[in-house]
Length: 158
Image (cartoon, rainbow, N blue to C red; front, side):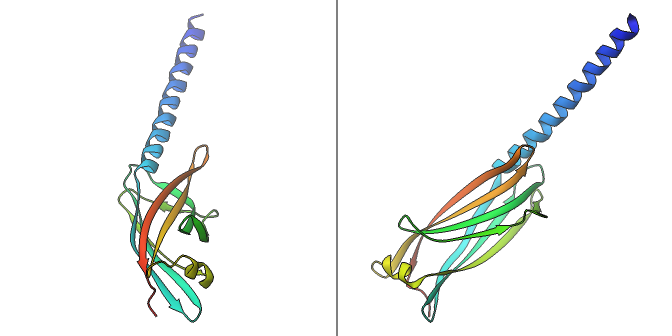
């Protein structure tokens, strides 16, 4: 009888330790996702023939305590609530890992139809929004972290 009690207590302690370890791993991962830092460095419009290009530079930094794996980044550009362009970078096969204290610079160049540009041009400037959606791999699947940047851009450089 004594042997069964010791085995039961030992099994209970092992399961409790594993549960605490898994919870701490999950907690650190959630905190790292919350502290994921995305900064818009610059955004500019350029004109080439009858095409308009939006060039943006974005910093993605890990300020958490755990390495996180980014699976996909989606960029959406809006001019006055009108979706102008959407672009997706998919890293699903490998993903890229953001270590704590590490900063990645993402530079994108997106072509925008000229008619959408001219439709939203008021007083030689455009009010726009850049939405960056970052999908992070977690224990329970993908987690979405979304960032919104408002910008005003004057007429594009030729």
